[in-house]
Length: 204
Image (cartoon, one colour):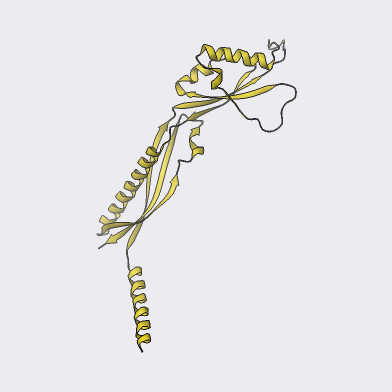
């Protein structure tokens, strides 16, 4: 008999709990934030190769080492050191007819025009990428702005339906642009965005 009473009490408690959960009111809102970020550095890939004599284009024959030495001299005049160059790994098949290598230089964005002014045969610019200062402070700033945006939207809705906004029940990050692979672009400015889904409790 005692066991039956305890079992009945447990079932009743479960039913009351289910009913309480089913009548709980909440609202789920999306919060967004974004900020334009300007590049502070650049990454340029130079390709240096040997050249063959061409009377039509008035190109003289020059070995790879001669092209490389000329490039280093021009860099030195502009205030750059050879140690600032990083050899770019090569993938795929090579052209056996000409010797060439590609080098990467990362520097302040204000040096872009100076580097682009270097002209010589056997020198080509393969790629220019802008680099951006992304840190935890920026991510924190955008996450807080997204949360405030969600709260503002939720309060607006509550005012319309004559209810009050209660405590936060859940926060879920849905969009985060702060992976290391996204700190460079072909454009000098980028837009970083942050999105959260927040569930608030509703109070009559």
